[in-house]
Length: 48
Image 1 (cartoon, rainbow, N blue to C red):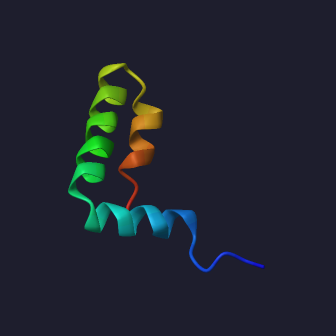
Image 2 (cartoon, rainbow, N blue to C red):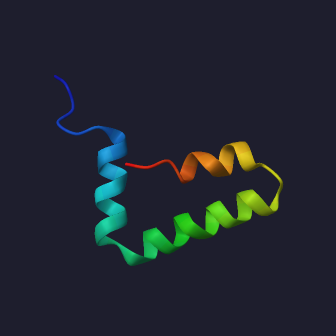
Image 3 (cartoon, rainbow, N blue to C red):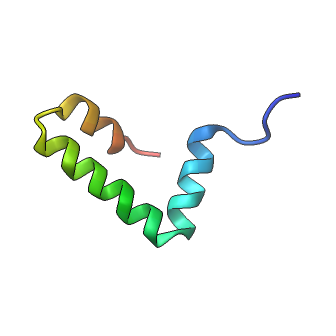
């Protein structure tokens, strides 16, 4: 049985409805960039 939504879509829905999750994800992006891992940090900034 296939999933009804993709993982990416589920994450985007949670970002839209959960301010604490959105903030935590943003903080993780900033931390990743500060650790000089722009490749991984850039993944977070991909557009929908």
